Image 1 (cartoon, each protein chain N blue to C red):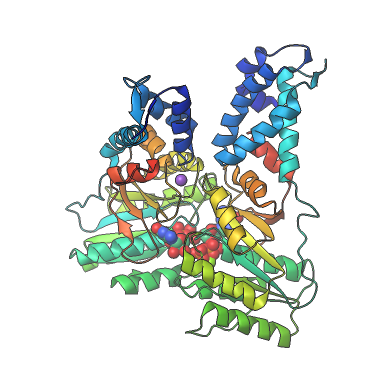
Image 2 (image 1 turned 60 degrees about the vertical axis):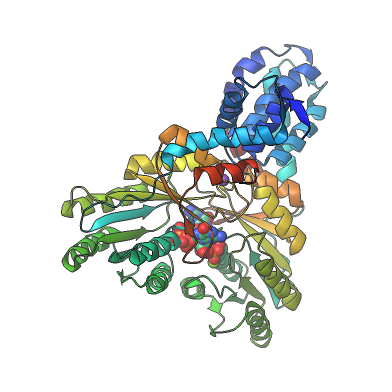
Length: 279
Length: 298
Ligand SMILES: Nc1nc2c(ncn2[C@@H]2O[C@H](COP(=O)(O)OP(=O)(O)OP(=O)(O)O)[C@@H](O)[C@H]2O)c(=O)[nH]1
Ligand SMILES: Nc1nc2c(ncn2[C@@H]2O[C@H](COP(=O)(O)OP(=O)(O)OP(=O)(O)O)[C@@H](O)[C@H]2O)c(=O)[nH]1
Ligand SMILES: [K+]
Ligand SMILES: [Mg+2]
Ligand SMILES: [Mg+2]
């Protein structure tokens, strides 16, 4: 293959490739600078450069690639949060199905009591996954549903309780407070709960994902991330800056609208897709 | 007004020539920072690149007057150029809905806000403009999608097409057209399922719907928080379906809204409305000045 010198021009091109993945300028500059170390001025083929770049990214992502941990707790409470339309409800359906298949008993609570037909949507997912869905009236207090769901899941001896929440933008202080309240109420039943608070991010989102993580983490003690819609052409490069800044585990990725379209986060594959290297 | 961006560019601007005309070097230096600002605001890279080129030639050689620093001068030129690019022809809120019944087709990626925006627009047309509006959900895939639109219809007092199980999207669209004609509706709005621009089957489906109803407006509903993929989404939806305008949702968030520039630059189609919340009245007409300021972080 033709080789060319790794020079400033080349580095700028690589930087732009990373920026196009939504990595953000700062992180893109840093990643390419790391790449250049020990390689600047050397003659390399495009394939060599790209695979080195992919390696660099995979290295950053390796520590955060961690499946949702299962604890010896009954019920283990998983609270699912995020901005509007990111894929929370769908991801709950997919996760419930996976856990069910793994032999766990799962209960879902339809904590989005706000959006039109949010409950109906989750009920369909519950049926698909073969998992019961606890609901409350539209407009009712999601915190009290969460409390009731805790009581019920304890009584039923369920392994997992997954709580869906309404979408909320992180700059809405009132809605973020509502989330804090849900958590406070859950903790009345179990001071260690929720054992996981999963923030669902949409891969088509750009740099605002950084604010999302920052605020949701502060207000809701986020313990891990899921990124959806990676079956599209968005590369989710912002995950690299997130890994760098927050080091939160990435539990899974959404790759479609069907029940099985939830994969483990694979740093190698992610890096390959991001840089355009064939894996 | 330009303080924030000027601040972030502060160091750079201090180095610019203090008087006379902006030199090519001055402008280049300043625009490097502007480029970063645009990218951080999620303007798609090719759009940012084009935009910078345009501004570069506009700014170079422009006179620096006494009342304004060279930095402010550059930012003003950038700001004006942004507004210029963002502003579409005609009044932002106008829709072509003469010739009843006029079809409005709503399209976009999954979760962008199509169904919600359909409800909001229907409310606006029915209330403010006194139109008789019918809404129909063509989303046969997403769980409870049709129920969602029906609930919104009841909330805003707008009719929805009765749900019939087992129909295709095109069949529903045709039924909506027929009902709109027979029922004396001014407008019928077709909410579609979310789809990826690379999903050939689903893109074909919406092309078939378009051919069946010949919509007067086809609105691409885009999340205002969208990142670099905005350009590709705009190109593909416009290329395959032909859009007449854009609605940017979730502008009540703290996103910088660079997708607005990408959408406009790529399609040349006007941004008609901005979604500013989840409630049915949270729809505003697009104001280029406001978005321009936001993109620049001002
Ligand atoms: N292509 C694709 N679509 C997805 C994925 N995950 C979710 N979606 C779609 O995205 C849309 C929104 O998903 P929801 O699960 O309703 O999102 P949500 O976060 O619960 O939305 P709200 O409750 O309204 O805030 C739906 O059309 C889903 O089918 C994914 O991984 N890939
Ligand atoms: N904050 C805010 N939320 C919005 C806005 N527009 C829509 N939403 C929310 O975004 C989420 C998704 O909206 P939908 O209207 O269901 O989106 P959609 O494009 O129809 O989704 P699919 O049919 O699954 O593709 C819901 O939670 C809406 O309430 C907006 O302007 N601001
Ligand atoms: K992304
Ligand atoms: Mg939901
Ligand atoms: Mg919809």
